[in-house]
Image (cartoon, rainbow, N blue to C red):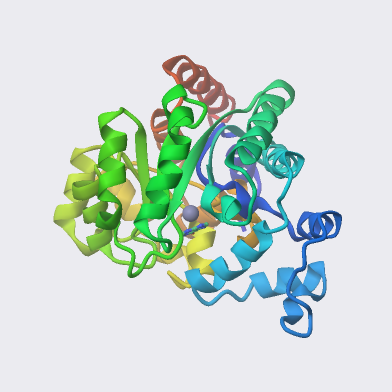
Length: 351
Ligand code: HPA
Ligand code: ZN
C-alpha cells in the first residue's frame, strides 16, 4: 500500500482533474435521498436487488463487467437529479471531496442529453453547476470548468442539437469544451465529425473518449477526424507506435483513469496500464477518477494505485503534475499559480 512519506507527498501534490463525470460522483446515499425527495421510482429490489440499499448498490458497483454494464447504473442513478439545487448539491459534494484529495483545479464533464430527455431543462442543469462552481471557488479555492459531452450511443443529430443549445455557453466560456462519452465500441469518432469541426472553426476546446474499450484505431480517428486536443482514457497507444509518435508530436494530453479501467475490466490490474511506457515515450497524461462514486475511489486513490504498481519517483510525479497543470483549460495566470503551489510542495518534500 502507498503509505508513509510518499503518501503524504501524493496527498500534498496540487492536482488538476481533467476526467471526472460529475454525474459519476453521485454517491448512493445522495442517490437514494434525491429519489425519495423527487418521487423518482428506482428499479424495485425484486427486479434488481442492487437497489435494496446503499450497501447492496455499492456491492453491485464492485462487480461491473463492462462499460455498458456500468452505464446502465450510471443513467439510472442520474435520473434522480431534477432541480437546480440537486445539480448544485451533486457538484458541491464532488468539490468538497476533491479538495480533501488536493484538487486545486477541476474540469467536469456533464451529459445534458441524459437530463433534457427526461424533461429537465439544460438551463436548470447549468444553473446548478455554475452555482456550485462559484461556491467551491469561494469556500475551497478550487477553480473549475465545465465540459459538455455528446452521448455517442444516441444519434449524431441529437448530439449536434445539444451542441447548438450549448453553443452560447461554449462561446462565452461558461462551458469550456466539448467531449464525447458513453458506449464506445460501434460508435466511432468520425460519426461526430461535423459537430467537432464546427467547434474547431469557433475555437472551442475538443476532447473525446477513445481507446477505453475500443482500440488505438479509435484514438487515431479522434485525432485525424475530430482534431481533438485531448483524449480521454487513451490507454491503447502502445498498440501502434506510429500513432503514439503522432500523439507525442502533437502534444495531445491523455486523461487516464486507472481505477475505472480495472473496474470496467479494460485491464486486469493497474500495473497493466501503459504508465511507464507513456512516461518513457513522452506521452503527456494526467491521472483522474472518471466516476469516483462508481469505481471505488477519488483522485488520490488513483494516484496511490499508480504508485503501488509503478513505484514512481517524486521527480516523475512532479512531471505528471506539471503536465496536468499545463494541459488544463484554464488561463495562464492560474497555471502560474498552480505551478508555484507545486514548487512549494516539491521544496517541502525534498530529501
Ligand atoms: N466511458 C464512457 N462514457 C462514460 C464514462 C466512461 O468511462 N463515464 C461516464 N460516461
Ligand atoms: Zn470518462
